[in-house]
Length: 121
Image (cartoon, rainbow, N blue to C red):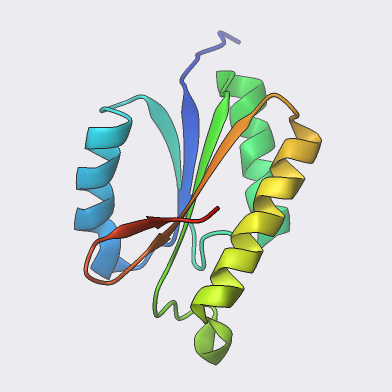
């Protein structure tokens, strides 16, 4: 099997309300075709599933960066989906990614429904 390389994997929610914001932002930040894209309910909510996909992207496409995006008013989180919960889950995800792939850069964002991307530190 031929190995193909790209720079990153982007993980975000499948919510239709966000796709235009995500498309525009990803084009500006990463360019067209420069990343694997994982659209799954809740973003990093199901971290075990997300980690399997990051491992595949790393193994098959030699990625060196993960961009993890959760968003405001996420149905997968329901009433538990506070900004604080999303930030905590994103930080936990970064910790697991960096534990599995110590050299991988991990960027975290909280996407507001108005289309603004807030970095999570």
